[in-house]
Image (tube, rainbow, N blue to C red; front, side, top):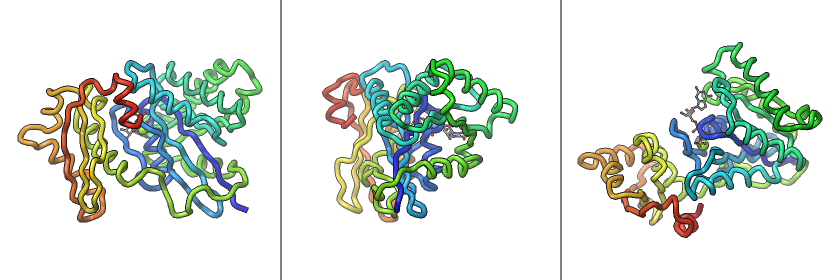
Length: 296
Ligand SMILES: Nc1nc2c(ncn2[C@@H]2O[C@H](COP(=O)(O)OP(=O)(O)OP(=O)(O)O)[C@@H](O)[C@H]2O)c(=O)[nH]1
Ligand SMILES: [Mg+2]
């Protein structure tokens, strides 16, 4: 009999959820960057080993929203916690536990009330000393007890300390999760590693480079979508919110855009012809009708 199930990866922005997903799957399925709010949709990474399939769901970082987009990102993250078998609240091992983390714990415990196994995962242990990790485990436990308001519920929470960057502690986490998967037919073909469509993936790779190479508010103002997919010719349209941002994305003499194209193409099958176009869509983050159209 095969087993299969879902695991939500939850946490405030930048704690390393997407890096964790990529590490667990063993290949890049979700884009990552130093800038918060990199992930904008639930991304499924699929791990199939010995008749056990685990579908990990990476989610946008939970935060206090300031735009319509922000509200939708939070909602996407919260919705991903519904109906999962395991919920992982990812915290930074080296940063003080704040409101965003407490909110993550709240949603994780909410999932636990609906049958999920609640876990706290301290990530980035490579950056914190052993004592700091232990202290953080205790602080996380206290936060769980406070949020749960129910000792029995708090006692169900499992704790892990990992580094998505180095891989430390990841095997234990994966083995634990695999052991908790319910009996079920496989839900995806056993050679599939992600549910992200080809076109969306190209747009994501372009956005990843833009997010990494730009600063301040610009990463948040960028949306990428494929407008033409006629292999090997792919056109990605880059939306920005203001005319001035268009110039920043293109760069002096087109330099930045050129670098973005090269870096994205390196990760695509050889022979891909990638065309990038920049267009201004004023304040797209704030308009519900535009967000509907862009698929958020
Ligand atoms: N030192 C260290 N850095 C890490 C680790 N995991 C992730 N990072 C870094 O943390 C930053 C954020 O990583 P992401 O995986 O994009 O974080 P995220 O939680 O998915 O962020 P959002 O999608 O914005 O919510 C990147 O610069 C990663 O390289 C880790 O285990 N150790
Ligand atoms: Mg992410």
